[in-house]
Length: 187
Image (cartoon, rainbow, N blue to C red; front, side, top):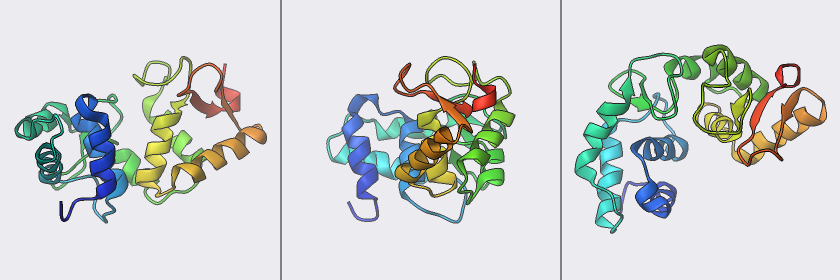
């Protein structure tokens, strides 16, 4: 399908019935670079139509209402299912505050600082990830890719190096999506 990113179509198609509108927005944010924040909802609909035309089990007609149901004007983190209004009618899987504070950032420590400051008590702030404090690894990988344009390999290497230095802590044995935190904040 012309004009659509093949990586988005492939990853979205692989998820089948488990694909949520927030997942589709996240894929578009990660794979389509723009100088503007977030994604235009009409672009999400275009992808849904493309997926539907390719036989994916998605109802493109329900996408606009699904976006509206999840849209919030909150500038700070609400939850994993929210789509944050980031101006000009666009939506993002990350709050506007994170975009403002982290756009172009390449230091994983800064992501942790901003995210942990935003959510306060991180124990109950996220629906994904292992137990305890910190930022779920998958959320950190996604945020660094979208906001800072780091690829997952670069982010993982930074996390590992900072763990080796004793700056970060992560209990990878406890959960496949362990939480990453500053070592002094880890229980």
